[in-house]
Image 1 (cartoon, one colour):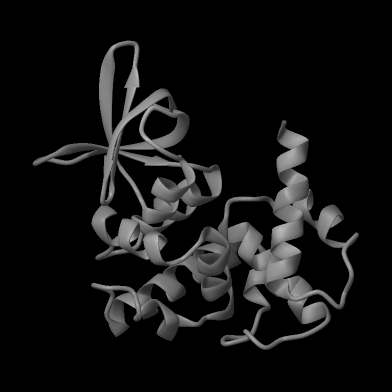
Image 2 (cartoon, helix red, strand yellow):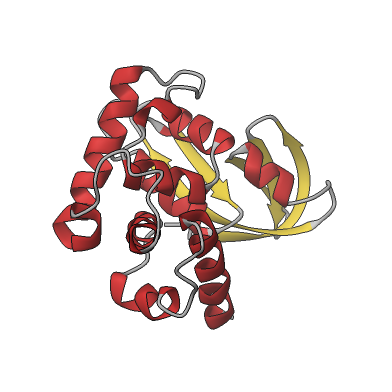
Length: 201
């Protein structure tokens, strides 16, 4: 398994970045978000990767951060959602936004992504929320379509979304509890991710 690539960005186009490492150019399928984040050709870049091996193809997917990689890996576990659809979703939605949609049960927002119909969107929300609920009580207890929740509901929504991004409840709760209860779920997620990022450096 290739965990990451570090090297020189030698080419990029829609949904593709090529990183040269030790004289070898690795073609990574990727999102518009990552393409915007990695800069211009000639830049030194590092991508977190996922190797997809199928009967008809072997493809490498690269992402600028682990949250986007985590979302991608969860999406492709959903029946009917392949790598191409996952890339399309994450090109339209940041990991934070995607996590909030899943945590709040807002499947309608996912249908705005090209190629994602109503049934696929509903399956994504149900499958991922159910999987999270088995190990994260905060997700299980959240009401569907809780996007307008306030106060402690915002805290629960932020916790559920962070769990979608791959964090454990016990590691993010101390950070969440330090934040103001007046903050929105999106702001709570942003501040918590910033703090978690500092801890891993």
